[in-house]
Length: 333
Image 1 (cartoon, rainbow, N blue to C red):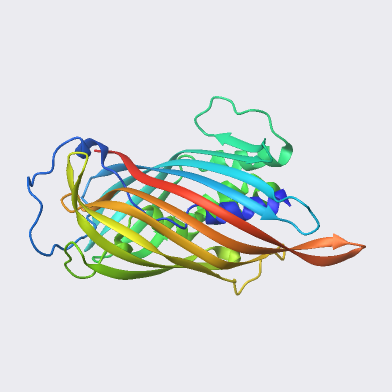
Image 2 (tube, one colour):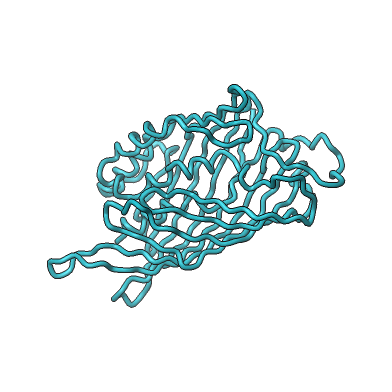
């Protein structure tokens, strides 16, 4: 059961946040403009030729899983920290964004006991069982892997190169990694969200008080897809540190859709109720969100094939999840 629960956690970890970043070097400097703009402003994601960025994701997740025939729910806490670099270069009428994984840490605690821990920056991780050690090996193999995103003139992603290499590195952990569901963290849909937040920005100039809808579907691989429907409101202009920013607050719902290609283990999931809310600070001068916080809550049913009496049956568990995320940029050169 633990392996299957960890699969769901891995799939959802990086899919439910309004992506953002925080330009540390330039954030320490005041904005060139000294006063807030008057009237509508176009909020546009900018990619500067030669720019080198480091982003940081922090996630805390609390799970409560109700298993049939067990009197008490299983409680699990998961934390994730991830740093990755982005280098921008101009290509034809668009941009090439190279992303490489710099560090990753992950911890999972169930019923008060640590059942998985990994830190790529640690000189030596604590000994673990064979399955956890294999997963840690697969995670360690992706440090330094580079992906190339080719963006068109409107910041849409035309193609991504390097995903096959990434998947092969993860698969080096063997069957334990292949069955953990972690590879779904790095599927195409999630990778696209990691480089920017242009899909959340309005198509028209906006000013404080304006609201616009955003709907985005993320492919979760064999686990199906996740559709996020948000309303984003430009609340006000305000300073975030020394930078002049548009404060964008968002709230909405998300739902899941089963995959047309069933999971190889026969596992399926269905989201009955999901909500999301948060705030981001968009710096129009830098052309990016400099910081973002989000909270998500959901109820999910997970159905897993289980052997019983010499035959395979299907067991359905109910899971409650609470997740808090922060995404920002550590540095820029």
